[in-house]
Image (cartoon, rainbow, N blue to C red; front, side, top):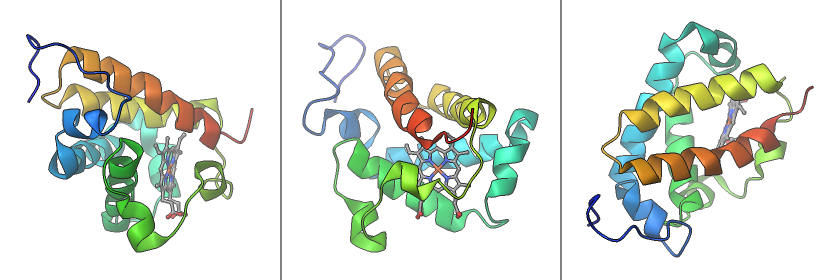
Length: 138
Ligand code: HEM
């Protein structure tokens, strides 16, 4: 296990990021905090309303997706089949405000996790990429 005093792992390599995020249980906790933030902050009202009232499946899907995306087991495709992030969002109106609201929820969730600061920053930088790829409006 890495602490702030250990050598910082190269997060993009192998399954380092998956482990830095606390494995499946850590990612599940992150996703729960993410959707809790989405229910709580006014900035996220529009994107909350894009989701169904019951967030159980959304929580399961995002947890499984991030597990594979961070280098862990490919749990999303195992249960739900293949996914491409821009295609998965093309029926939604996502502009810069919606992208930034999504990232704001994720920032709150990431800050609430027991991660080293270096991993928090790495994760938010990396998440910008699929968030921007989900955007389909100016
Ligand atoms: C940019 C802002 C984003 C918004 C507003 C957004 C919103 C949504 C919504 C409303 C759904 C449910 C769609 C439905 O049930 O019809 C969804 C699905 C999903 N989103 Fe996002 N999302 C965003 C970014 C992201 C990012 C950055 C990721 C991954 C890192 C992601 C991963 C997923 C996954 C895995 C699903 C399930 C897709 C499926 O099963 O079809 N989303 N998103």
